[in-house]
Length: 114
Length: 116
Image: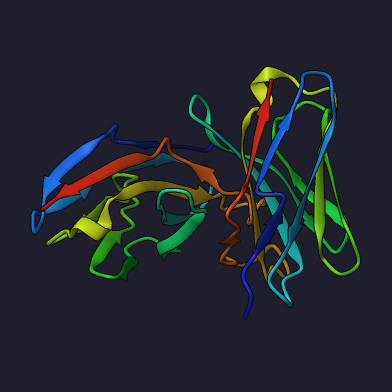
């Protein structure tokens, strides 16, 4: 079946620290991969995406590379800010059928302190 | 362009009652998907509607149902509420033509349902 596993939080960092949130997946076919972010009291926002192997998604200083050989899509940012504090979700849509059916990881809470 | 709107934002019901939640997609979007978010189970896909037809379905009991109207607005209904149905229910819309390509989904702020 299809599933997503991401590192448990919370992750606590100081401002300007380097961020990595690990994400691995299991999927049949060729899934598309996503990172979503949820700020307190809000819905989900798409942070970045990659639709095929070796694609790199990037947005707002965040990056993630679709690694088919390791079935991974780790999120990185070189220098985090307090405003990056949120919950981050790794997700996939199946490669065959169900293209709008997002399958999410458990989420990783990030807290950035000044 | 207005985003996805969901009404009501907060709802309190008692066990055994039924509830209807509403979602208005972004103008021009024809696909609406629903998700349930709970601390224990995380984010889980409920179902997707496209052109008034259910196109995908998650693993939820038949108490959870939905529909989509000709203007793409969607409602979901939960009958015979249980305590475990307390959750944030999120709606997402996308352009979603054929299922042969990726379609970005845009999420609404959610409806917080509390079952007492």
